[in-house]
Length: 129
Image 1 (cartoon, rainbow, N blue to C red):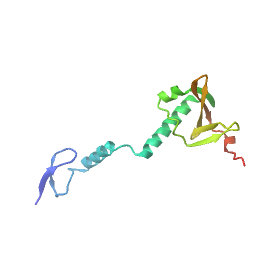
Image 2 (tube, helix red, strand yellow):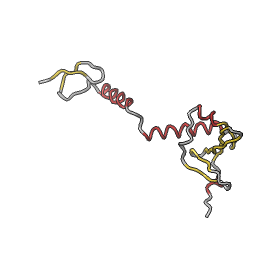
Image 3 (cartoon, rainbow, N blue to C red):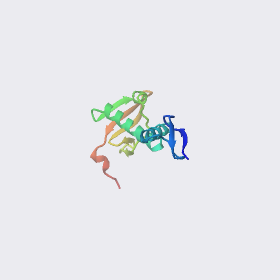
Image 4 (tube, one colour):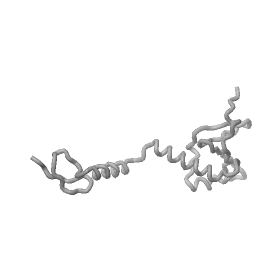
């Protein structure tokens, strides 16, 4: 015996097996895509997207190799300093945070929060014993 029921995606009546949920592969695919979009974004995707945005902004604002910029300029564009890939400590003890090859150092000058933007240099790879 065949039962009639609705397609989960387009709501058209479908005839067939009792466990059939969709009228065709298009509806099945569209339903799964729609369902996945409603799920909260996976943690990995959030981190990856933020790293990509941070890198893009650091690259865009650091055309000269070393630049100082007010922190609010980057923050307003979505930059989040809590997302970085690695760090480097200079001889003065200052810690530069890097997003791949673009780095930043948070500074406070005259009561204004700023970032010193740099690009990764070969000498930074040297490990001191």
